[in-house]
Image (cartoon, rainbow, N blue to C red; front, top):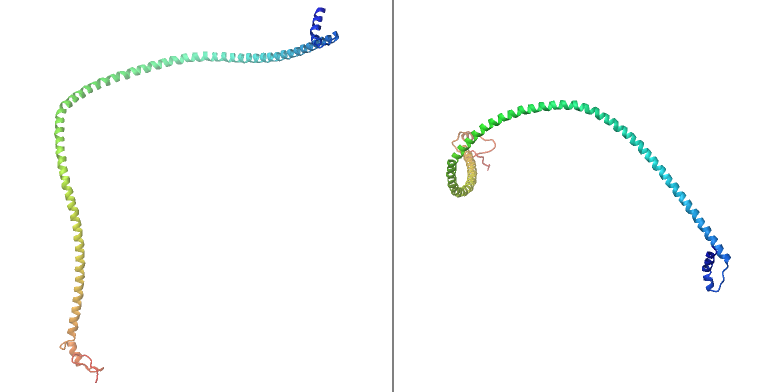
Length: 256
């Protein structure tokens, strides 16, 4: 141990010897004590940290154990529920077996009804086959008659072509007739206008003639009244006039 301390003193005092400074043995011992105290303090700190970590881990383990115990209790309840469900399923299986027998019987009944329906369908098929044979015979007859029908169609097509040509020629004639009809309508309208004007002229002439006739009758009456041999004029001449002399025609004459 002394050799070790001597070596440490030599190593630690090497830096001082380089500069000509001699270090004492008492300073080296103090440093060793400080290093030992520091290591002990660090050891205490590490122990305390380790204790805290152990406490935390213990707390976590306790929590985990609690959760595991709760899970076990929950699983126990679930297991009991599953047992009750299994019992219910057993009961339902018994009921379903009874229902299955009834369903099988109903299925058999349905099969029998389907067999009866199938036999009826087969009968319908036989009837339809007979009708189909009849239709085939009719189809063969139609095919035999198709040649004659095609010939008639060809002849009718040719007739239609000729009729179309005739209609086209007639269409040109009809166009000319339409033009003539329009021209005649215009001329007829002009004739109607002229006839209306002539009627108006005739009516005006008739009115003028009526006026002239009435005027002539008035003039004739007036002349007849003023003739000397007219009885009214003779009476007027025989009667003296108090208001003055008159001439031979019965007109008054101014006094001299």
